[in-house]
Image (cartoon, rainbow, N blue to C red):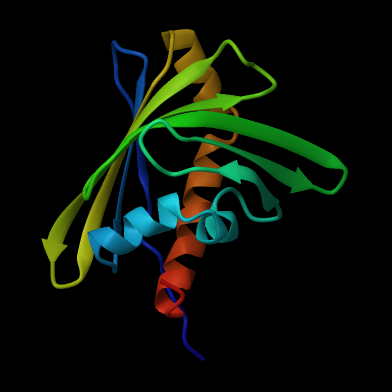
Length: 162
């Protein structure tokens, strides 16, 4: 029996700014990691905590495009939406909003760094409106969603899906 261990994501709150930074390494190329974040079929397979399914309502991954998806757990459903502001070979800039709190918009910047030997470091930064808002995000279950989701992404990468 083979046991796969996944590297942990580091989730840090800036001490004086309303910023959350997630850092995680993958056994993948930068292009694979960006594709996993921009291809709606792939994204739906890995995003979020274990036990949820993701349904993409629309997804237009280009500068000026928009997106909306729903996380479904039993009878509960949570919808999220945003806009892609820019996508390059190493960066995605987008907004992120939970429909349950439409006034709380996060500006998300995801960067990938090629570490060589088929490894990539992902650095994702979320800028929210306030320290209180940042702390609410951290209490919301974000950590489980990030860690579970990236472990599922590792499995997709190992299985040759990307």
